[in-house]
Length: 198
Image 1 (spheres, rainbow, N blue to C red):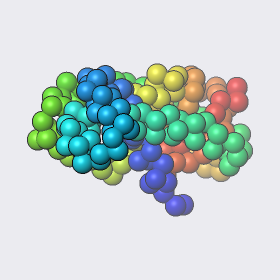
Image 2: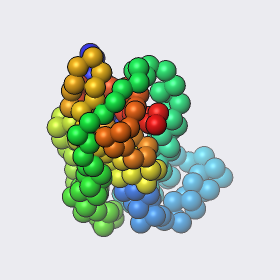
Image 3: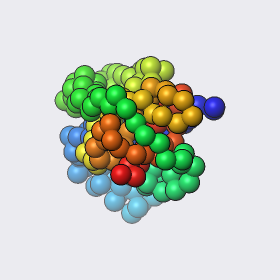
């Protein structure tokens, strides 16, 4: 089965939604809008670029990533209309939703209070976000997603009984237990997105 690496990175961007919102608020600078307004008056791109600060770059980048996160969520919402498995039962269900909180406290919160006023800290922030993303995908922790938790998704570890029994990390909207019947779509060999039938 082809691994959905692109989807994993998309989920990583979505997982940082709260961070980008925080950086967006912290890096707001009304002078940026004054500079943009001046540019539209005199069309002098050199003057505009000279007034762009590291804080402005973080503000613009955060805004772009917030929009990207919203689009990723819409993609997830509408892209899984087909491709579901047949109905299956689950067993040995364990709630792993604490993974959301661990990712938030370990990776996101330390970056929230980053000083965005200098080029050095902006570069450090970029390096950390890229490095954490690579670790996040390589170690298959992409399901530890606080943004999905806010939207009501939970993480479970369970055995799925579908032409054999296999352990999966299951992401689903709502609660499952040993009596649940689900359909699922594999995200990789050990992780799946499930919807609860009953």
